[in-house]
Image (cartoon, rainbow, N blue to C red; front, side, top):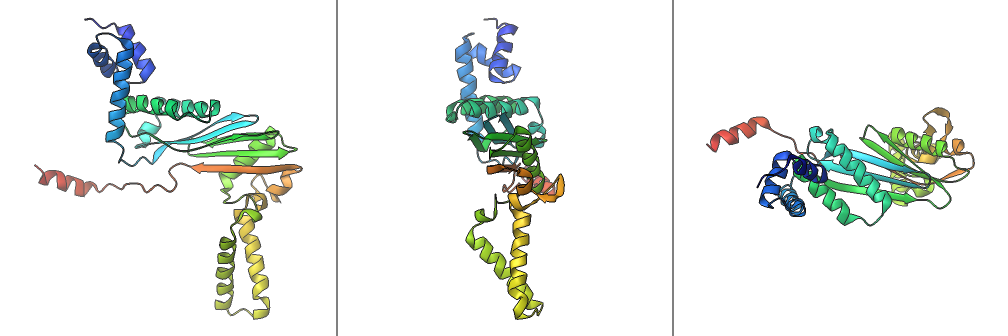
Length: 278
């Protein structure tokens, strides 16, 4: 039977698959649109399964929301080329908005990924996501070229402008903890031990070593705790000081691919193996 171009394009727009794949799916389904969609989704599942052991460290960190609701999500693929395509950027935005609509949306997201895998032909995975819904507070998000994403919730005398500014600060300063009370005890003790050993190695008098250790711990807090950091837009003030009546309840910062061990290609070895296999 003859497959109409309009049906092919409709299937392409629905699934994100390539034109050739859509035409073949419609032909195999004798023009039945729903069967063709199901077939392409099954093909997407098979493609995704084949690619499951590949390393996906590229991608996009997407954010969405405002007011009292926000979402941050990291969606990974295999290559920077694919990550920059219109289809992949649209996918990450769609996933973020889906999470914003409903916290439990795993099946819907899986379908999106399966459809996208057929079109993009790389392993695609949602590595992590967070969803904030504030009761009486303000949630702000910030994305830095899709490589770094931040979400922060403020309560008390909070404004969207202040929350946005703090989100931008978090992107730039990369705090590890909210405040000094958030730092685990063992981390503080380890830092004290390092500082104490350094002071002893420098042959500092015992009478001042503990004062030096206390000073070093205070500096550690100023470098690593959000509320104690010097505010990037006015380093004469701390983030705590610029909050002025607002309280930072929580924050999250994603940096694309952090913690993923990327595969390094040895092209000389690859060529050698290829020549030996002939």
